[in-house]
Image 1 (cartoon, rainbow, N blue to C red):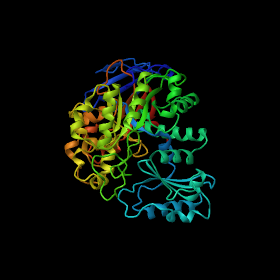
Image 2: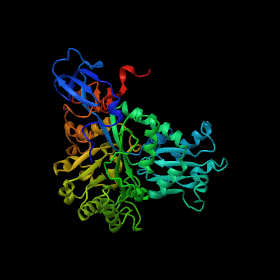
Image 3: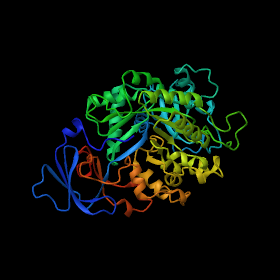
Image 4: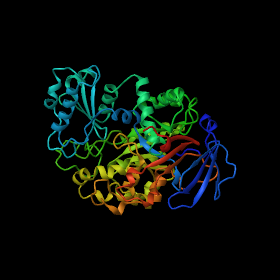
Length: 511
């Protein structure tokens, strides 16, 4: 599922001509000059045109690359998480609860809104979330919600449960679909306010070289992005996932995957139907062939199955009959087998999202024509300790990007923001170097992919710049190949262009 190579609509028509002087064409490429007009690359020349049209921007030998895409985001959750209490440093349930208590004591959050925290990872906690740890909030009556880094767990206080009509819930810990619903309801704000948050988040993404993303927000994304595009020109291309609750509406409107939504300046397209096979690693709900260590026998020690195979195939087939592809969430090895089985039985194109743990017997099947693997390499370095514990003895086939690529799988890199920040460079670096910025040794370096492959996977498969291509570009301060592993995640961006229009310029940024 790729965007067309030429820009259309008002975004392209409004872009004034630009000459990018003295840019290197890709990592290690030659010095050249790019003339951009009508939203496309109009010329690539070794010598600067004597009478260039429009503005001239001297890149000073910086590197120009195809603009970057984030192949998996939850935009409203990411925009909201940027304003929530940061729980990423909590090493226990008690510590997470104290961070929330400190935020409540700060008095900067409106009492009538839920106090939301985001980013805890409880996979290695010695204690567990429980009501008593949030009892400090009972006197105030303010709703308090803590959301896990993987978005699959929500820990709520009594007031939050009451607001949801769940006052009889014994633990306040909600998983999977219940979690998604609770977070959406508790975090709801006026659409105009949310849209401002989203605008800020998209502007920040453009400053990191992002020209587009696939939005898997748990919402009516087609309606929300049509509204946003109607208010102001968008700073990125958006492909909108469709959830089952909105599938019939999309079908009744005759919408198909890849269609441009009217009134969006050609920048918003219909995406895939989002379906879930399993949960997540951190929550120990990813569906696996082997049990999680230490979990009691309950039928869920192997993870959980969110959608029965027959129902998964029914929904995929219904969508496919109406021209809508499917994106199937699968993290555990058993879940990935089920997803592959469904694609083979239905015979439709689409995506498998995450592909974190695989059965090696399935490797050839990931090369299925029309199948895209949406992966998040930053999770490999973020979750290595959790994987080493809960998937002990299997991590040689987890986050197995080299094996998938060698088998012929088509990789696209995303962040799963807010699980990781909406910034493609940490994911690119993790895919290539299999380590983060903490100086730790490489984790399963045999699963690293090349820089060229990682950059292509982060730009919808675009590897080169050609005359006639859409002018969705990023100019980086350094050649990516020249940066050390710990420097690549923070790659400075000189400018970003969308259909020939600047969406970020470091030389004009507000101090």
